[in-house]
Image 1: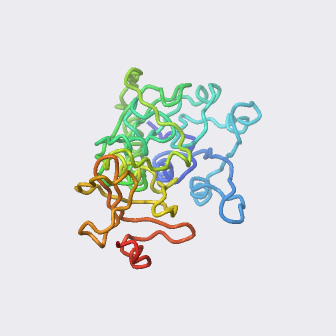
Image 2: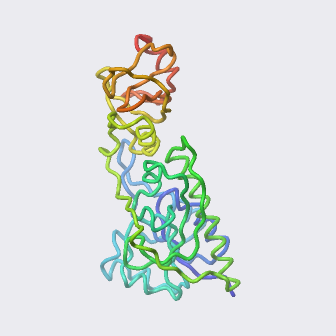
Image 3: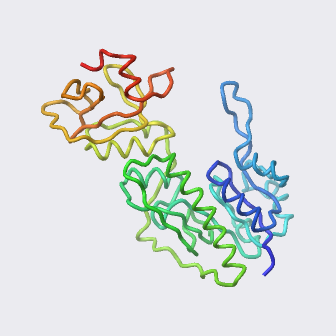
Length: 311
């Protein structure tokens, strides 16, 4: 079978490795990505990672604000691809686009569907304490991550893995899975899509900044997963000693907190080089944190700058 002609749709860094594979294994007619967004202190418009990589490759880029109007998708529908491959594009595709490629639309989704349909599958898998996650290549339909699945690839989630770390491993896995799928397509061995079991579906809604606020009444393991799930964005936040701080990493510790209230800083306790905080059950040792307007730092650097916190 000849190399497929495809359009690639994606926006953030997660999709860049898959675009690299698409370019090496297929003829990429164009890249569909979201419009440039304001960024930085000057709020100037900046292209996303996928657009930057496409321009490096000399691939035409299409950036409609939305795809619901015929005028928005006119340039796209002039192309004649075999496939549309999406990875974290960020916009729902209307029926006119889903029905347009000869062999439909594939989506690389960062979960083992039907678990964690939606915008934040990586974060929700960590928060829930899932031991495994992966990438699903599905044949898209009009729903949100509801299409039948062709192939999946799994990996284990590390006990202290952050969303940033898991993101990078899943991005590489998505690229590998796309390479495998294109090879199977070429040899006529790509599995037929299998419908998802909707009764087993869980949902991963879009994250808001306020979601990252720490609830210290939860147990230590739950709070640690919360902190790791929101690293690198929006970053878990709280107040300690009447000071707002952001926490990037933490570890549960075996400690009898006695009558300490959840969220109370536990000074001393035989560990002067640690910052420990009481939870609803157990305690956390903070490993990496940040004060407003300051750099992100290790707990050792934090305590060196604030010896009064040692107790």
